[in-house]
Amino acid sequence: MTAPILETPKLRIPRIGLGTWQLRGAEATAAVAGAISLGYRHIDTASMYGNEEAVGAGIAGSGVKREDIFLTTKVWWTELAPDALRASAEASLKRLATPYADLILIHWPAKGMDLSAALTALAQLKSDGLARAVGVSNFPPGLLKQALDLSIAPIAALQVECHVYLWQEKLAALCRANDLAMTAYSPIAKAQVNDDPVMQAIARRHGATPVQVAIAWLMAQQNLVAIPKSGRAEGQKDNLAAASMALTAGDLAEIAALPKDRRLVNPDFAPDWAA
Figure 1 (cartoon, helix red, strand yellow):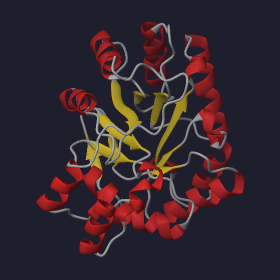
Figure 2 (tube, one colour; figure 1 turned 135 degrees about the vertical axis):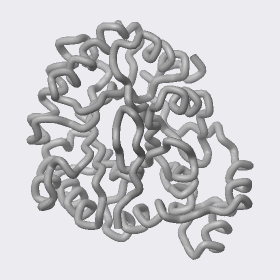
Figure 3 (cartoon, helix red, strand yellow; figure 1 turned 90 degrees about the horizontal axis):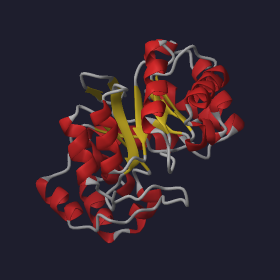
Figure 4 (cartoon, helix red, strand yellow; figure 1 turned 30 degrees about the vertical axis):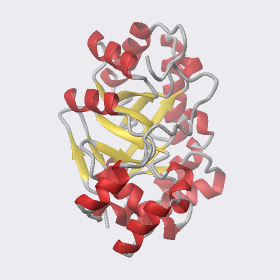
C-alpha cells in the first residue's frame, strides 16, 4: 500500500507521511524502516527533534533507494540568520547522511526576524541542490502572504497544525491560490479524536477508527498532506489505509460542525496567529 501523491507545479509529495517528533534513537530508526517497508515514502523530521541520525539510519537501512523517499527537515527559529540557516541545513544533511532533503522548512518564524534575509538563504539551499524544494512552517496568514509577495524563495509548502478541531481557512486559501502543499501536523489532534462521540460514530459506520476518520477528513481537503506519528506497525498501517477511505457528505457535515479553533500547539515563541 502506498499513499496518494499530491503534485503541484513546485513539488511532488506523498499525501501521507510519517511524523517523527518525539521518536528517538533505535525506536526512531525502527519506526522509519518499518514504515517504509509498509509503503510509506514520505518521512518528516527536524533539527530540533534530535533524531535526524536515527531517521537517516532508518532510511538507509530500509532497502529503498534514497531518491524514492520524500524527506523533510526543518531549521529552528533561533538559526534564521543567513549563515546560521545554511549551517543548520548542512548539519541536518550530515546527520541524515544524505546530500539533499526533498523539502527544507523554516520551522517557526522568529520575532523580529529579517524575513528577506532568511528567505534568500532558503532560496540558496535550493539553488545549491541541498533542497529539492523549500518552504515554511507555523507562519500565520499575514506573514505567509508577506513571504510569498517578496518572491525571494520558491515557497512550495506550508506546514501547520491542522486537524478536525483546527481548520485554518485563510492559510488554506493562500496555499490553494499559490500552489502550496499544506502539511498538517498533529493531524489526529494528539489522539483526542478517540474520545469524541461524533468521530466514534462515524468510525463505526465505516468499520474504522476515529484516527482513520480524522486522517480521511484531511485527505478530503484540497492540497492537504498529513504526517501522523506512529512508532507501531499497526498504527502505521491504519494511518496509511486511511488515505483511501471515502467519507460521505453526511460524515463531512458532522465533522464540519465540530469546533475548528482548538489549537493544541502554542509555545511561548509562537507568532501572533491572527496576524
